[in-house]
Every structure is written in structure tokens, then in C-alpha cells.
Length: 224
View (cartoon, rainbow, N blue to C red):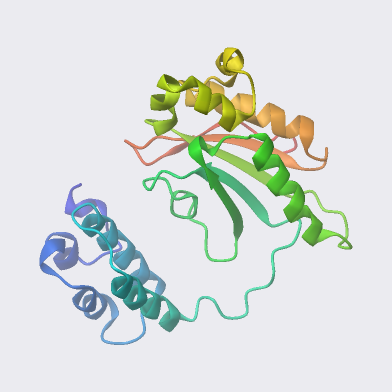
């Protein structure tokens, strides 16, 4: 990635990231004070560069948490309600829904599994979470199903019995899940979600391209 492609990070940070520590990134962006949102973005970008080369220790996670806590971004966030955005995404480390969709802390309830697929287990989890909203005024809410290109689930077709168990279907029905095609698969899952969830719930299907960093609305919410 060219250093010019990250304008929110100062050029000296963008063009020589491997020579700078997080403390230097912090100083370069806004001085030696509590990190701002821009600094957190810089830290996130640097973290991605580093994580490809090394494992992350518990001490490192504690240090990063301290930097996060210093932002105060967690303070005063309300408990999620039935109309809080819900996102179902894949466990792939390249495709964190909060980063891909630009969600701030508290803006979305995110659930992740292999492929970001609607399975009976997923639906049971959403139903259980729905218990937390009992007694609240009825609201529509929005479920975003986020699939992505180059998904590892496509490599699991060599293990049909385990994959069938994941979907809780017979192995001879796996073709109906369109595992090899994220664009077809997200339509399959959106249809299941619409059939299962309350009619007031908006459901949309998105696909993220890991090469471009962009999402495509493949199956839009009908009421949007």
C-alpha cells in the first residue's frame, strides 16, 4: 500500500511505519497526550502491519488496552436495544466488521462465525439475545449479513461432513448453501433471515472485497 493512500496518518508515519513505535505514532499525530480517534486509527493501521510478522503477547494486549482506555471512548455507552444495528460477519481476521463498516464502539452488535453464515445456531443466538429486548417498545432494527471474497469457508468443501454439521443439514444438501460463491451465499442467508426473523426486521446482504477494501450491497433491505 502506498504511503499516500493513508492521508489521516502523517507522512512520516505512513512512509516509515516499521521504524516507529506506537508512542512515536502518538507523538507524531497529536503530541504526548491521550490518543485521539485519529491516533487510534493510526495505531490500528500499525497493528495490522505488525501482526502479520509476529504473535501478540498478553502484555502487548494490556498495553494496547491502556491506550484504548485513555481515549474514554467506552464511557457512558448505553446498553444495546432492539434497534441497535446487528451484524453477522466472518471470523477471518482480515474482515473485522467494525473496521470494514466503520462502526464506532457501541454502534453495532456483532456476531461472527465461519463465513458469516446464517445457521440454526446463529438463529438460536439471535433469538436468545432478543430476550434482552423484551419489554421494550417494538422497533424494526437492521441485520447486516457480511460475507467476503477469498473466504476460508470455500476451502472447507473438502470436509463435507463437518461442513454439513456446521449448517445442521445432510451433506447432500450442501450445494444449496452456495459455499463457493459469497455473492450467492449472502442472498441465501438473507432469504433465510427474512423468513425466520420478525417481518419488521430489515435484512441486507453485503459482500466485502478483500482486494479493494470495498463492500457491495448484494441484497438490499427491502424497506430502505
